[in-house]
Amino acid sequence: MRIRLDWMLAGLVIAMPASAADLTVSDAWIRALPAKLPAAGYFTLTNTGKAEVSLTGASSVACGMLMLHKSAQSGGMGSMEDVAAVAVPAGGTIRFAPGGYHLMCMDPTPAVKPGGKIGVELTFAGGARLAADFAVKNAQGK
Ligand SMILES: [Cu+2]
Image (cartoon, rainbow, N blue to C red; front, side, top):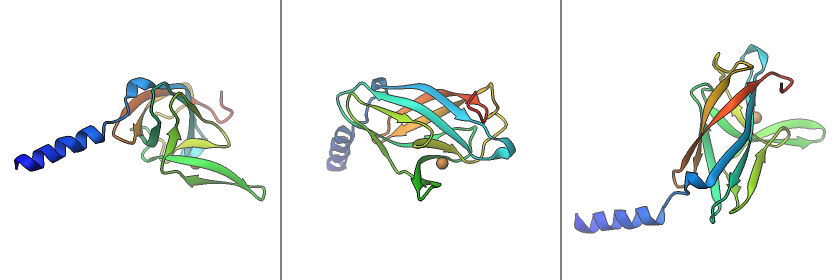
């Protein structure tokens, strides 16, 4: 038992989560579409820490499933794919913006209504979590 406990503690030290104190979300908004279509969310994520962090997921009670997606263009056709993780380098900034990375709110609830706001929790490798409010805008992004 003793040995096993020591081994677990060593594992905890190695897996020290990135600190949410080093992470900032700004310009966070989500585009509400009519007829409960999936809504794309955008934000800027800044890492002021000394280590790279890896964004691995997001969740919101307003969204059902909330996925990490990346838009791509191939042969003039727009498409999007699932993304498992997005790395933010030490001292770096990643933009989730139209045409690139975005959050995909798969099953928007009535809370996803222009003029309102929804809470989103971002999850990072190692277990750090960061909560942010996303302003809900209309299809024109207003
Ligand atoms: Cu998408």
